[in-house]
Length: 257
Image 1 (tube, helix red, strand yellow):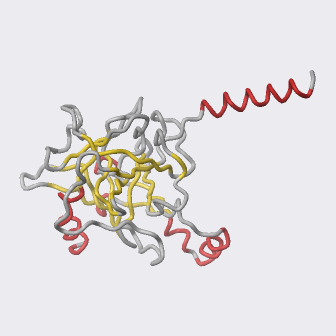
Image 2 (image 1 turned 90 degrees about the vertical axis):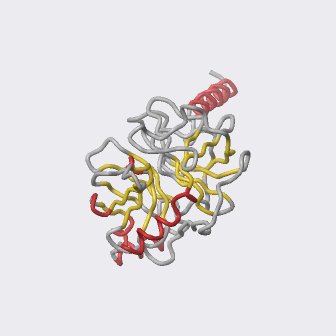
Image 3 (image 1 turned 120 degrees about the vertical axis):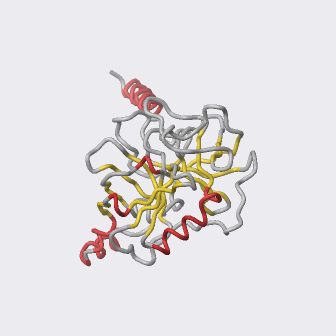
């Protein structure tokens, strides 16, 4: 076998391997220094896996269906810190803060005036994160949802199907706000209507299993939470809850608890 033939075989094999690796969120790329506020949430008993977003040193936001049971929360997954800093943090005992188990009593699902739950939840951590950890900012109290065709940023660590291995790092992608279809709704367990739900669509960009709960970013601010939770295939029309509808509740819940 000639050296040139070996090179051709190696090149062909690399093409096949790289072509088979489809990063989730589909159509995404490495976040690098973006989305350092991203949080990963997993049910302690297994089964559920989601994303979330850190709002401050003590609170994060995600989709309600991502928890409602004891969960393990992993923070600082995409933080831009050196190995030396991480090691020093470990010696100080801070590493425990970056992985916490949260009981249901520290999980707060939004309920409307009729007592119906919506698919958005605040989670209070057991202890404060370090003050320098990146968080995502909320829009103003009188904010309005992004208009149709507005560019928004999404991200996550989901897998193409339930049971498959999650991404090893947070992935980022851009998509566009679009009109919702008749079937573009959260799980039937949760109340939703045109005032709370918005959608995004862009060819080649999809949210997959495990990406629910992740932040939708617009102009550098939190404007949505992904509630699409596909199991066997990824979702091209991405369903989200409009954060502007929940601003007052978010602030009241944090203040009272």
